[in-house]
Length: 212
Image (cartoon, rainbow, N blue to C red; front, side, top):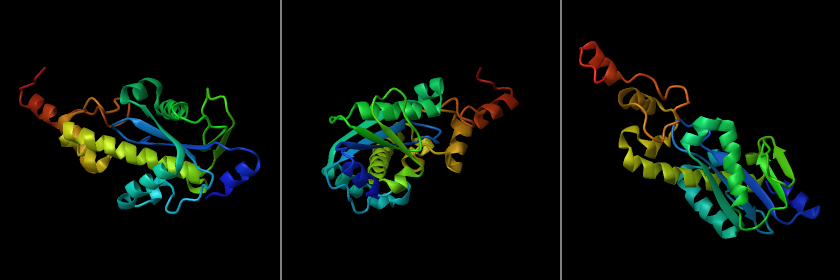
């Protein structure tokens, strides 16, 4: 997974940033991106696409990345903005923020199959980039760990949705909770299934006890 980075170094690039986002398909919570510039030796054992790394290993691999990286930054776009501009644009905005937040200015950017408008530096979109580039994979893991911890903190505030386990994804139990309790302030109102009628409200209507 370091072949691309090594070729870029041989071509004169020195600050190679990998960028990726997580949480794009969730019903709740922000979309989170990370950007990572690794040190001169980009080989990192255990680093792979975050979806391919066991949850029990992900945090320790993230710590390894943070120790070995020259720079790491996060970009977060909240649900309200996702609803306003759509998830694709929000994902790219999160990546834009992550790159701009880096303490080291990258001279080339590796991304997973997209480009980000408004960044004045060379960009290389790679199909299945999180499986081909150690830098993109590292960014994927950092973003995933950050977002998972964030969703765990939301679980304490909104326990009925079980964000600690579903991370905002559309599991059966999460969708069932939406039908019973409705959406929370961190749900994406523009996503299908979030604003469906509540079962409790429907039962009250049938009994002639509408709360309207």
